[in-house]
Length: 300
Image (tube, rainbow, N blue to C red):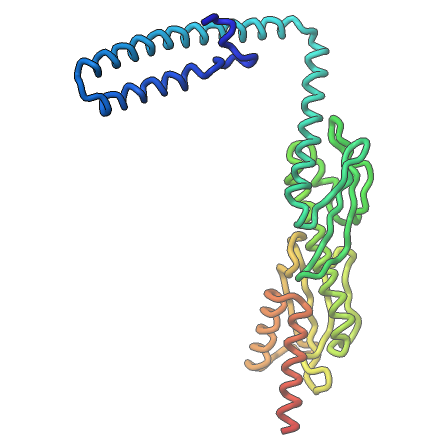
């Protein structure tokens, strides 16, 4: 068996020397069980041992040949011009970025993150949703080069896109996209809640809903019973974490009242907790249901 004929292009033995060794050892083990005559067993084992030793010597030669060829490859690489090596490395990095982007978009196409390849990179689409309701979509053109950069986008100016891209775009594109999705979904969710309050529960409001462009600060005056004689309450909802759809700080006060009775204070604290733990329109839905139950009890 010629040494050159037993090497693959990648340096592995053709025909599997190690696998062949394992098969021979297995045969030797089985022969002890199957052959009944001791002399036959001894002869069979002796032949197998001889063959194994022969193959082991061949294996050692093959390993030495692989090492010799690897050393030759390293020596030839060392003679390549530095600029040429740099160009090859840069090309490989860009190709990996392409493949990474395609893999991310393919794997997470059902989570609101999608995109298509362009001549210079990829156009990413981030579709937002809240409670199963499809909301706004935002687009971003990424140019795959070194460094990776954003060509144009429709992300609102109050989303910290520049800060996120500076931290993660070049080093961790997957984390960058997912974090951006969190910001956009949370913004759309807060905006959706505020819109629902104005459109569906205007009867509960004693004045206009005030909100900033990021919808992370809401203030409004409301009544728990829109047709009743309850005192108006003032609510202030602050969302310090811009990746959340529930407020971090909630303040509810009775308008024009400083000292409160125990029952009024308990009601105020209970409503603060509702605003802190439930979406805005869910809170007012519960108010509306309580009003309907009160009307039913009066009728009956």
